[in-house]
Length: 105
DNA sequence: ACACTGACAAGTA
DNA sequence: CTACTTGCCAGTG
Image (cartoon, rainbow, N blue to C red; front, side, top):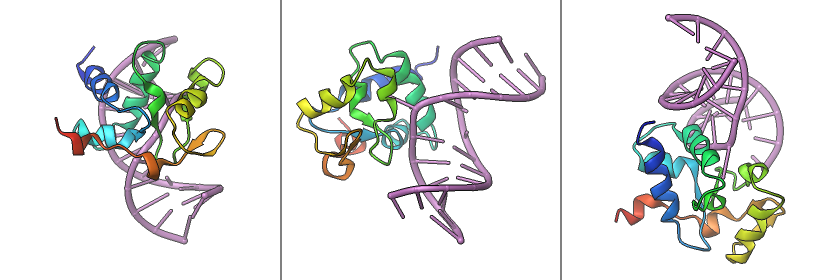
């Protein structure tokens, strides 16, 4: 177990409500070039934890990981955060995009 | 050590 | 926007 997952978790947990981000944004924040796959892989293992993985979508704004959540939990939760949906399982990524690199804490 | 899979991204057509 | 190809890294058998 490398610290890789830890980085992903910390970043995802910092995503403000009503905002979404992409795997690529997280990957870049971690300094990876194409670790987007690893990000999704890591989130899969924490889909049932306190990690708000539902705020992480792919570059197309699609809720790719909805299948790993019970029922439509992912979609409904985002809607509760007032996230704009342009489709039942696709959010307006450009309207709610949150980039961790701009936070830089 | 080898092969396959995976919540993907970026580029090109 | 869609469809196809390449790259990339970790986990599992």
